[in-house]
Amino acid sequence: MKAMILAAGRGERLRPLTLETPKPLIRVGDKPLIVWHLERLAGAGITDVVINTAWLGEQIEEALGEGQQYGVRIRYSREGTPLETLGGIRRALPMLEDDGDFLVINGDVWTDFDPARLLRNDQPETGILATLVLVTNPDHHQDGDFIVTDAGQVLGEGDGTRYTFAGISRLSPELIHQAPSDEERLGPLLKRAAKNGRVKGIRHNGAWFDVGTYERLAAAGTHIRQFGTS
View 1 (tube, helix red, strand yellow):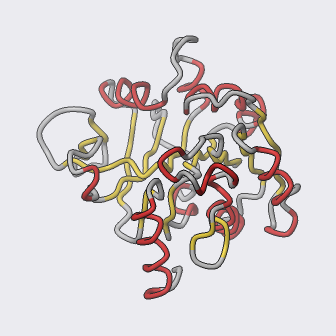
View 2 (cartoon, rainbow, N blue to C red; view 1 turned 90 degrees about the vertical axis):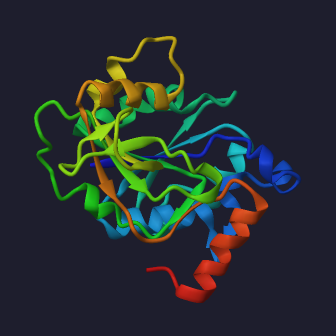
């Protein structure tokens, strides 16, 4: 299975830091944020990785190269002007879909989630287009994104406990192919698939940080210093 790391954003909430350094290369703990993802993917046996780039993308390529030092093989999807999440995945799809399902990871989260958990069900249920990693709602997103049933089915609306999408998922190429060509964001597509009963979810009870502000960047670093990385 292959994986894609979304790394094309401008990181505007982390300015002025991101004016000269792309957000994926910001250090969290003792290494750049994106390196944490590469090492965890390699540890799970996922060695083919696609990274989309735009803002200061040449710095990402210079820092990571072809990925050998992290135990992976990296290919780059160069966007020029940053695309939204679905648009970026759609452009990179020819590099991803030949192995069937693939993983997608937001490059601006830090977590101790083990990607191998998304590989244990190598033959997903018929009709399932996406498996989402879900976490307890953080303070900055208390309304959450999805409801999860006891059977693990993900619902966009309804009664039940709401959880936040962690920005980590296993997607079927079919999900991307069925999206309207002018749709650029992944969220609405996942909501529709969930409404149709075609999305599953797994809970992650460990550490997860959306490293989108200075405060959350500092919180991730504090966690690593206090509790380590596993």
